[in-house]
Length: 265
Image (cartoon, one colour):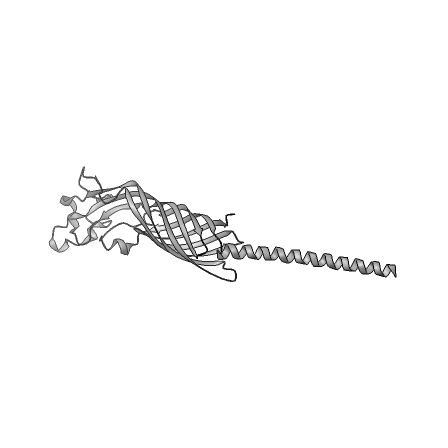
């Protein structure tokens, strides 16, 4: 009888241990789920730190509003990229504050630029070798979806300043050698293309001597105005990948951020 009672007590103890183990597992799973929901759905303040990589450029149709012939970004060997970092403060109200710093290469190949509607004799050989360091702050709306809010659509705007490095220079064409004299050709810009009248036999531009001047339109400081939208995915609670696109002052961009987010204690 005593042996039977002992076996019964042992079985009860084992069952109790198993129940306690299962309860610990359940609590740990719930704690992980709570953390997952908290960081992904941003029910509490979340800080995100991310390096940022962007492809930038001013589309030809935007420059064509002001210029007839012109050079362009992503041509002649130029690789117009922007590199930087951002810090996001996401609050329970489904909004986030952004603070960013980045450097963008805005250089273009040398070539003739002509203001839209001007006669060809006013064309200028333009050399643009410039970059800009932007610092801005903004606000974004965030909409989470997915089973745990791991997908997040964001959109917003930012304001700041851009400090310009580099230079832009202009030189007028040599009208005695390449100006299309007949009036009917006064707006024929084919002479400004390689092989046209405004290039010599070696392919060099025909320019006025000693007339190279610094362009007045490249300001040392520019306002930075940004509009953007993008899609973010949260990996394993804390790691974040985002794709984004938008407009910043004078160029369009598309980019990628890979970052880390956490909740301050």
